[in-house]
Amino acid sequence: MRTLLEFEKPIAELEAKLEDMKKLANDNNVDVSDAVRNLNAAIETLRTETFQNLTRWQRVQLSRHPDRPYTLDYIERICEEFHELHGDRTVRDDPAIVGGMAKINGKSVMIIGQQKGRKTKERQHRNFGMANPEGYRKALRLMKMAEKFNMPIVTLIDTPGAFPGLEAEERGQGEAIARNLKEMMTLKVPVICIVIGEGASGGALGIGIGDRVLMLENSWYSVISPENCSTILWRTWEFKEQAAEALKLTATDMKANGLVDGIIPEPLGGAHLKWDEMANILKNTILKEIKDLEKKSPAKRISERIDKFCAMGVVIE
Image (cartoon, rainbow, N blue to C red; front, side, top):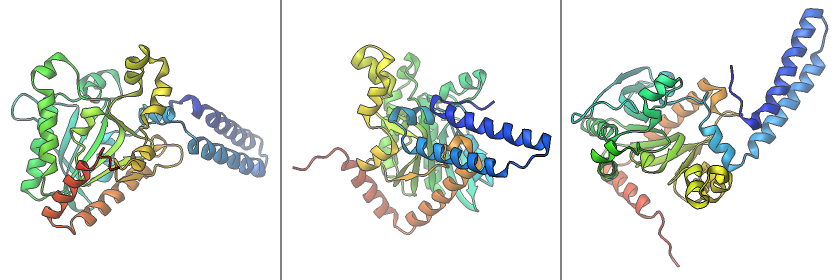
């Protein structure tokens, strides 16, 4: 069964009417082609109007849609080969972050991303996409391996944040993320970071330093989630919609503020409706960005990467 968000329900109701009309016509051998055509046009018009006028909170809801493709779903569709690598060589493997060597159209890359789960047991296994320190250390190990073998790095960001548990802090959560920020700044290979869903706080930034930082159209990227922001400011989650508006966390907002380099369009209605089409768009974007970045020398890429991030938040009067 398809999961429907509140603003998707009017569209789904029209789609259900369309299916009923087609079934009735087929059962009674009646020509309703004109009515079908008109209803199809009405559905497309409603879908276009709905998704062109989404609020920031509705985009947050879309980014968390339970039917939305996750990292492994994209890897399955865009890579001809994928060899997953495990462990940080210090503590253990962290299933919240997956990564390994892959081939995209014959091009060797290192692909790393946060992975959520769909069913209860998988969600627990993946820790809801919230990485522990060993997850970030595993990611860094794979990045260093990619640098050694001159492989471009692609990171897919989708997390509600780094795991906030006591044991994570005891094992150096802050240090692990900080080290990743430092090391990713000076990687000699092209680095492309893409927010495919949620991009929350340091949990996202821990694999988010790159030559190109891109966002899917219905993703979000912020220092804090709307719910947690609402809890801090109003002592309740009830003002999450106002918090989302104030945070300006959508792809359009982030691009306007110069915090990301581009927006990757999604199929009309969201990535969760057309996985294959979204994966193809993502694949073409990755290949194009790698091709453009490989034209530059490592020294130039590093210099531009550092300058880009150092310029963020700087105010010149």
